[in-house]
Image 1 (cartoon, rainbow, N blue to C red):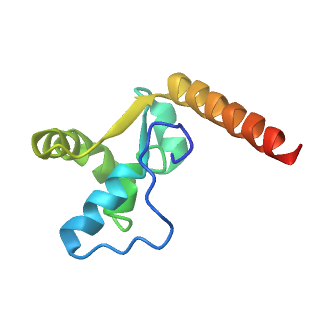
Image 2 (image 1 turned 90 degrees about the vertical axis):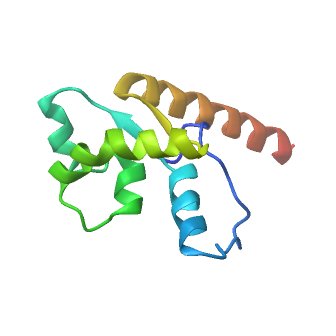
Length: 109
């Protein structure tokens, strides 16, 4: 949920100045995987990384219920909401790892 290359990165020492900034930081640095099958229950809510980060104690079924509203609010206020299907998310992760592995290899020489 964080390695798709579609999330924002903030400096490691970034500290939100308010609760609102904390919510934005949690949202923009996460990625939700949209699974439209009973298989989503296997992930225990971790498929919805954004909602999980915002409400870590919420039961899985509630995370799935609030997802459309969270996305709507983000769109309304211009907060980056990263999501994709399971397979698209997997491809994005592989591409992102490939880019970083290539860059790391280039820096090693």
